[in-house]
Amino acid sequence: MNYAIAIDGPAGAGKSTIAKILAKELELIYVDTGALYRSIGYFVTQQGIDTADTAAVVASLEGLKVELRYVEGVQRVFVNGEDVSDYIRTPAISMAASAVSAIPAVRAFLLDTQRDIAAANSVVMDGRDIGTTILPDARIKIFLTASPESRAKRRFDELQEKGDPATYDEVLADMIKRDYDDTHREISPLKQAEDAIPVDTSGETLEQSVVRMKEIVYSRLAEG
Ligand code: DC
Image 1 (cartoon, rainbow, N blue to C red):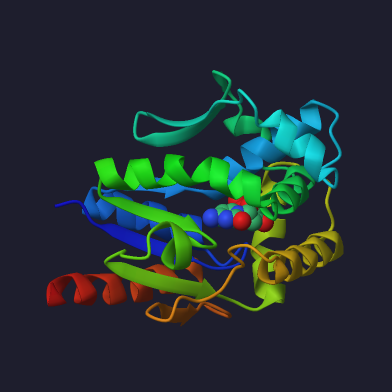
Image 2: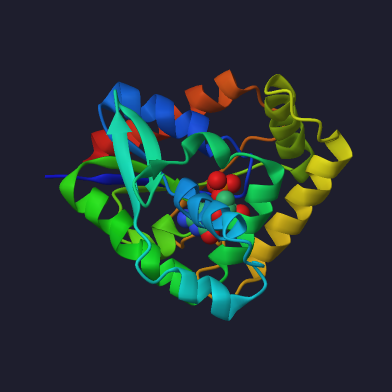
């Protein structure tokens, strides 16, 4: 029987790093759902569409094909057959992704893509609404948080490694805005599922968080 581990939480809490490690150890497929919203943010930006223009964003979904494919076990996201994975991690696309993710038609558009993968495979899926909306029957649900400052610091370090010129203050301001938007949107806001286990990683190294998450997941799996 396939099963799912849902990891939700705000940007920069360590979801993807932890989910990838769990997926590897447990031989599950890792599904980064943020990449789906990012690919639409990227697509509409490329089309010159203002993400605030809901009608235009919705119209652009007509005939659009967004797919997740796994190349040597690594998730890649394709838009109309083109691999856009390398273009979707910039601060501008983060904001565009957050904006389009508040549009109900965008969420509906991506719903089946996410559920179909989880129906066909055992998965670790990370996002904002996996435990509440996409996979309400997930076997284990974790709500991963950390203070905005520690999340911004991690994201800033990642961007610096890539040579991105964003400053820490810009990253923190973007993070706070994105948190606000993601938790205040009307549809599927970022919210802890009632049956999710809260894990706060503030002040922990990634290694410490990974150890803690593994303990939680393995003890839950052992419970059956
Ligand atoms: O996890 P991320 O930073 O890659 O996500 C980018 C944006 O996409 C995020 O600001 C909110 C949105 N998102 C969402 O609304 N629901 C998800 N399941 C995943 C991401």
